Picture: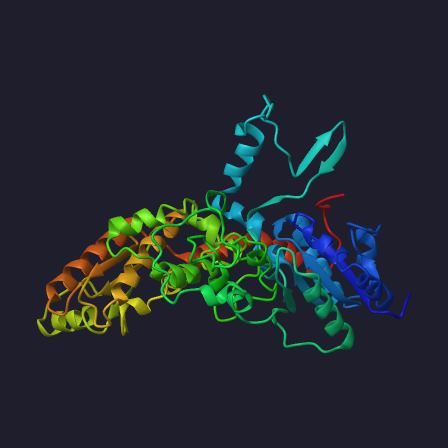
Length: 321
Length: 165
């Protein structure tokens, strides 16, 4: 066995974008590969679960786990890697706070299964067949992972040392985290490896943000010609900047699109969506209920907008059924 | 034997109007339901929507927010900010399945001791009819599904049946 530190990458409920982000390290990835011994990386290399099970406990220096936890298989892998690793890094928005998959927490498990296997247009399933955790066919037993009742962040299932935020984390932040780990310069447990400042602080449009927004309506990006210089909130676009952690160097506003909040909140905020409402909605213009409601109607899906990447870690976690 | 459900309601009252009204209700010896736990804040505008969600998450069955009437805010604009935030918060609560009635915003001036009594009694009866919300209990219930595997992996013993092959 190599004497280089062992590193594992794993994916749970995710899109693969976080894996792309690792590849986006470009030439830098060679430095990483040189310095570490990759023992698990399902997207790129062939290792089996038994390889990990066979390792002594705590023998992996760091496990980078992306994706939310939705199934028993993901939960089992997360627990296994926790047992075998000294450091677990929650990698990306889905692992940190549920991410896009956590939007499913607005629906019950039965509601989801019924839609996907019966009601969804285009489904041809007259027998209403659904996947089963265990089925027997001519004496052969087939098993599948079980779908949990809700989507969880990684730290709602296992203990996690560090968080790399973003959808996906930027190569710069990933490289800084890897270098800190290799150098043994570890910050306190629980640290989010990104500056603890609001996104607006990094945004080049910041100076054009008025102290009182006095918004008279909200627009969606496809409905307006976006001014590339002016604060996006001042243009009536829902920009999550004020309630979102910086570190991405305001990539989306730089690309003329509003921030959707993928870095999650700063350390002072418990609930990103509620904090956004607190900060921005106090600044709309009308003072009467009817006028206020007309402005609010410009946001048809408040939960999906304010908790786009974080419903699992919101204070209420999921919709009550 | 089941204990009779007594709603737990967190009330945020502003220092200048609603809290003064609650004081007035007290010195006037008006009787109202003992189910509210009043938290005095300097202005209803101090109440971050996070406070309301946190109250629910920690076991409140209802949340009442009281401030000065529009135009009467001690800080001129605070209650307008409250109204705007809470109109949106109400939509979010609906989206999360906490329906109308568990959360209420009321304007109560310092002279309206009787309104404090009426509003507190009303929300208490409303929440009593809705039954317990019990978010802490729900969190526990939801997480039961992940306890089983935790015990299994941590013991590291031979498994009875493979979950997946």
